[in-house]
Image (cartoon, rainbow, N blue to C red):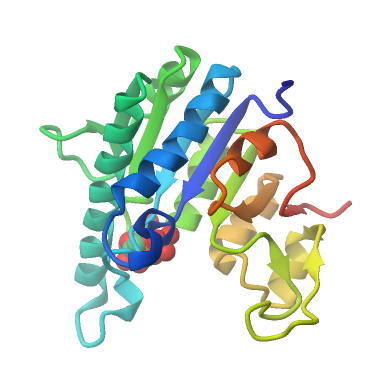
Length: 237
Ligand code: UDP
């Protein structure tokens, strides 16, 4: 199979790693996702992964807690997911490096852009944890930021729905899936694709975004081959 995209930034939400239990890590699910990542790497793709942390903690839903501290807990949550994904990829004989935006050198490398790209060139999968390293941001924003830094051609947002709809497909049977969208539409209509900081970052840096369903992990291979799945969000046409 031919590659449509060579270097991609894959955003894996915490939810995608939790499976049916919705909380914590379902290792079997992680292994299934990683098997598809391996196929993509074997095809020649260079993959950097930004992991979320929502299966453990979300800073913005932490009630009375001071937001900066709550977000620090959220960033730590992404590290747990990063280590689980690294472990599964290594079991599949891939070379992996975890880099964190907050340093914890006994556990992972610090995030260094040039090192990350060097790893990718050598065929290693790079897992980026702790989001941007700053509170008040999300791992979606980290995905846009890191994708721009490492010159990824596209951000893949692997989610639990098969694209972006005009209304909630779980509530409305007549909901229609968009095949393509612009970031301006996403921002103006407040479509639930990614937060507005992340969408603006993608738009301003001309980074396309493909939203697709990860419950079939082979969608990663389909997406990288350019098959018509999910919703492609681009800058204005
Ligand atoms: N977070 C943060 N700064 C970042 C990225 C993440 O403070 O740059 C914290 C924030 O509290 C967030 C949590 O980490 O709620 C988990 O990330 P996110 O909610 O993006 O995870 P996902 O929903 O994708 O699983």
